Length: 235
Ligand SMILES: *[C@@H]1O[C@H](CO)[C@@H](O)[C@H](O)[C@H]1NC(C)=O
Ligand SMILES: *[C@@H]1O[C@H](CO)[C@@H](O)[C@H](O)[C@H]1NC(C)=O
Image (tube, rainbow, N blue to C red):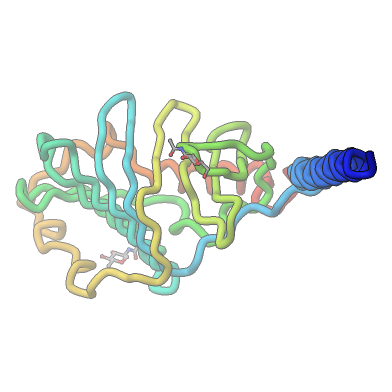
């Protein structure tokens, strides 16, 4: 019977070995959960000084495809908001760090100038956001953050370089990031403010109030958080 004994030993070895391997895996997955503990919260993302993003914007079931050109170095920021099937045309939302914003529609030749009390968003505008833990958004593992009592919730990829995946506002507006490119800045001629924005005869763009854009929201947030002292990282 020595062959049977060897076989029994072999099976016993396999069972013990497999069990150990299983235990090792269990330890690894526990380590992963451990990483997600709020006590070891990742710090809120800081935006690069220049980037381009393509966002799918869903605002109370009104969809638009938005190109966001962020140029903090240049003190300017452009949102090109293209409505579904072009039914409402394209809204250009140009924001300058000197606190003037221009909302215009090139086809209609309408423009509206708005003075803001604050400049464009700072790259570190998420500083002081509260960490919400990990969440899966569209099957992507993300870190969740919220700022200003849920005014905005922001999800960035767990995998470096932690690109944003989605952000949402308290009123239900959802922005999904479809494309994110660092340092890819818009051609200079596209930053030119159209002449009709400076013409006394020019017609006013009417939609800017009813189409609150990413940055009018966020600039308001920046203002709110500055007022509440949250921007200084006390949240
Ligand atoms: C900001 O810059 C733009 C473009 O140069 C100019 O038209 C606007 O008057 C400036 N706003 C302020 C408040 O200086
Ligand atoms: C979700 O992600 C997992 C892991 O990366 C992958 O295996 C799975 O196919 C994905 N599911 C969908 C619907 O994309």
